[in-house]
Image (cartoon, rainbow, N blue to C red; front, side, top):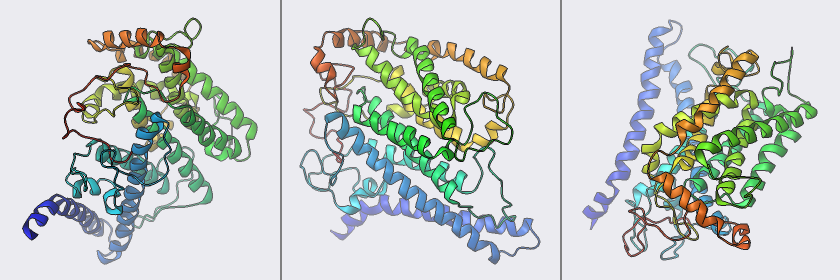
Amino acid sequence: MTRNRLRKKLPLLATLTAIALVAAAYIFGLASIQSRMYAFYDFEDLIQPRLIDATIVGWLLFFCSSIGSFLNVVAWRMPRGEGIGGHSHCPRCANTLKIQDNVPVLGWISLAGRCRFCSLPISRRYPIVEALVGVSLTLIGITQLYSLSLPAQFVHWHGGPLWTPRVSPQLLAILTYHTVAVSTLWAMALIRIDGTRLPTRLIVFAGIVVVAAMLAYPTVMVVPWQATRPLYWVPEGLHVDAIMRVATALVAAALFGRVLAKGLCPTADLKLDPLGGGTRRLVDLIAMLSIPAIVIGWQSMPALVIGAAILSWLLRPLLRWIPINDGPKGQIADRGAMESFAFALPFALTLHLVFWRVLWETPYWPSDQSSRNVIIVAALLVLVVPWFVRDRTAATAVASSVAVAEDRVGEAEIAAEGSTDELPEHHGDGESDQRDQGRDHTPGA
């Protein structure tokens, strides 16, 4: 009995050991290297600052991956019209999960990927999403806390190897704003990769936390809305500028969304078919593009769209590893260009925020610092993106048949929140056969 328990805990013990070794290698290894590089610092003097670094990173990873765990629940419940409050439970046996089972990534490893009560498999989607969101938000937190990423930010002297975070109320407000915005974009992406339309309440929530927050506290703008940065510009108290910033960002999102529609939702027609399936996908696309447009400004949106298109191609192997949730009225058989691009958007926004200062200082990256010609050229290059991201396989035929099927759905059903916009009936994808009692499932529903 004891031997069996130990064997089950081996993956968890191995993971914890690996984490401890990485932390020790950073603390003692970097302290040793720096003590040789700097004559005025001994090895013992550098242990404490590197221990502080490891503690901050560890806490951020846990907190941010917990956000990823919550977003898994959001992606499962919101499209079904369910509340996102309450304890997580297994959708098969309905047992409430224990606290230790909800620990991000480690809980799944500890259970060996199976429910504690019914022993049915837990989808690997859980730890993958938790890890991706955790790393994404942690990178943003580290680069901003250590004054490495925000444009025009005062770069304080890090004290040589004794660098430490520099925290202020303004920085915490900006970091919180970016964390909530990227988390909201992740929630939208996780719903869209299942071929499910974005719930209205999620779009409303995004408007409140992304738009209203900027209007109320303009400091989170970071960069102005003008094409050319005004001399000695600072965002504090510029409420009118915040309104212009939001307005120009929404216009840019709508413009780029309409351009991308040629490759991602070619059946969309806002005039002749405002309630069609393709049009609903276009509305979701514009809603997702609005978040990065507001966060980083319309000037850099062409580059972000191009970057997201490239990432959508590079990340497709990773996307295939994330199982498709059963939709509230069925599920898609396979993911196409729309799902790949939606999945790439949070990555693109994360990379832009992490390297924002470096990109902002580059004259060939479109921003309020670059010339207008750079912005124009980048915007023209976006016209090529629809050809790059479009489906070139049989998935195109599937998407077209889906749009036709959806157009025949009654207006009342179309207006119902939480309906899918891909296939009206169930289509298995290899992991979703309901007759297979050993299939993956989502326990946080």
